[in-house]
Length: 278
Ligand SMILES: Cc1ccc2c(c1)c1c3c(c(C)cc1n2CCCN)C(=O)NC3=O
Image (cartoon, rainbow, N blue to C red):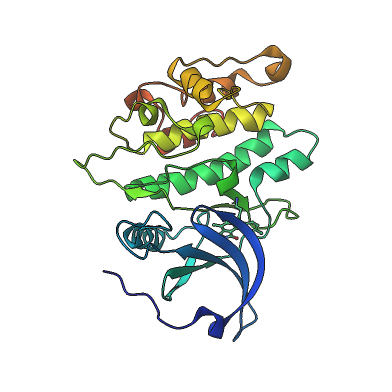
């Protein structure tokens, strides 16, 4: 069992504003008392007993920590420290101040394909690195793609929230139905064995949204959204894609492929002519 620092996190960090909250607990801005540096503290409630439904299994938190320690990359949030008290584990994470990618996009009139490509290159570099270490995110969505400084002419992308991530080694089988309906791959819905290609499907959905503002499979209810995914029911409606290049549509079509083995990998995507013209 991993041992985390038993110190009281508030002895070392001053608590700041809540940045987000979820089933897991809260993310807060925290200031390191010794240096004044700002970090993001992810406060995770741990189950007090095996049969409790409140909070997370400690093993899940240990997995997230192990994975974050294994994937140190310029486009992946850095884990600095881990503290544990009675029923709480606190991850001290790199603070990503530029907010979510899609809030950034929403503030702009429209996104040029060249701008979308610069964001996607960074996301794909992070995925090529992670997938090369057999780490799969399994929850890639606009909320988990953040910018380090949105006022920069070339904002840096940071992938966050590895709570659903897994290390899947060769020969191992992993199935899960977790994730967010709009972005999950058909094999997740069918509870089939999963691998890195599930992340690549999510990149296809995210690219479609980046270029059109529309979500390709989203419907009135989650059930209808999932049915659209299994039916591969998406199109490039001229109302939203009339100025989109055929190369960009080809890139999306090579990711939104039902058979995971036929889908582009992160490596393939970085060499697609839309991303890397000859
Ligand atoms: C400035 C800002 C605002 C909201 C933030 C964050 C930073 C943030 C961060 C992280 C996580 C897991 C969630 C976060 N959230 C919650 C929402 C994430 N989509 C994180 O790991 N570093 C962050 O800066």
